[in-house]
Length: 218
Image (cartoon, rainbow, N blue to C red; front, side):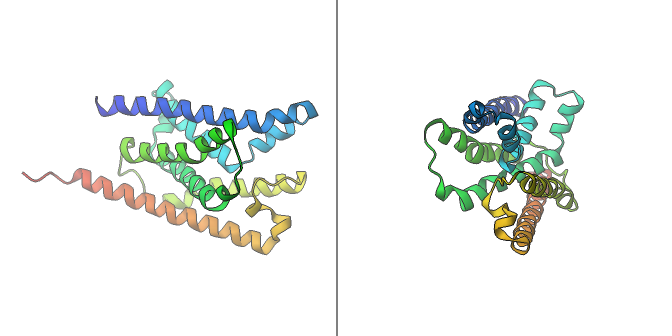
């Protein structure tokens, strides 16, 4: 099987897995709000989780090259920088969940399945897709600074939405509970982690590109 066909199959399988995980998370989180008339509110809350937004981004990045590779959005999804940043974000989601949130999880049944998909399966699938199927050598050392725009916009949205609604998606972003100083410190640490991880991605990309260009010994 050639590399292009293997990439197509891989992306089709895990794109489907990503949408299944997102659908499970939506149904289990939002469905209970329907009888209370809070469907719109909880739908907005659902799309206020960094995990959900990032899984949605990765699902799109995997889906578009399969269904519309020659379109503008398909070419956007195949851009090495786009794929690297999506993989970076979801890798941080998986690592952050495992270190900060997983210990208190009591999910069972379909809830546990959906949770496992978005926090474990999809981060690993995205990382392997980036390592194996994404063209190498297209990243620049300046890219990680630009990749911080997405989390910065998310932090601003979380603050605005949180103060307006009184609902916060994560305990470590609960500004009233933590206070402004501790909240600013948490955000700064998260941005530094993303920046360092971004530089690591660029280093890996350049190392693999040099290896690919090195001629094999006779």
